[in-house]
Length: 267
Image (tube, rainbow, N blue to C red; front, side, top):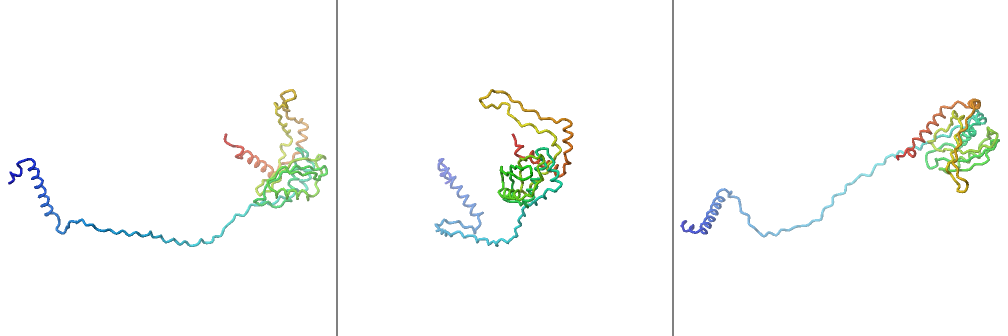
């Protein structure tokens, strides 16, 4: 019978397939456990139930506890004491640098009457142009600029109620500009006198300035005037001993000026 099945190539191929299937069926019957059931394909109806997502319960947070707020107290600076009789006596005789001592004592007198400076919106500065008559009375007060209305108000009130001042050192009207600082961070402005005998540098004049009408010429700046040895020696006798406060205030002003970020800007 087998010879009949494999007489032709096609019949031999079919016979090989039949034999292979038979062997696989025998092997499955031997090695597959008896409790294994073949899954039957069933047309099962699958029901899908859609449910709305459940919201998570909101976490209940306890109310914030009341905490004591600590606020920083504003900075303050008490008004300086008024110039003493000795300071006014010196100021009324010091003639150098446009009566430098008199101008300083006048500003200190005004600031002493303005009260305590408190950090805040009222702090600031005001700059005046002052004219004082030879007898020491204030003739004119002109506001040049201000950063605080309160500072100007207090300063003008102090000027109007100032006590009688000594005569000016030169016996002439004294005209000057003065900045009054009404701030808790203001530094002592005590002047130093050690350089007052040095001549003032002449005002700079543009040598190439021309009005367009006159003949053009190059103008030269005048050299600084030099005192004679006798005049210099006489001048040095007027110089007082600089105070520690004055030197410290001068150094601080130089440090603030040259250490400012507005001066040392990158190029």
